[in-house]
Length: 89
Image (cartoon, rainbow, N blue to C red; front, side):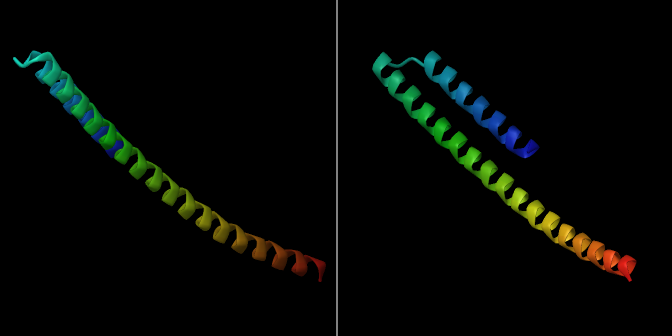
């Protein structure tokens, strides 16, 4: 999770820096707006990719934990049934 936040912060910083650099660069307004739009789209794509990666990672961890809990729970259930049979005898 921390790595995802760090990468997201880095991407945000790059986008802000690029936008400010474009705003203060001597260029025609139309060209500047095109550059800003292009850098904004790049930022959006980067964030979208990072979000997808984060969702995939979280999903994998949840699946792994679910399988682990099911396998641990199944073993406990078997032990409990064996204990109940022993008490009944």
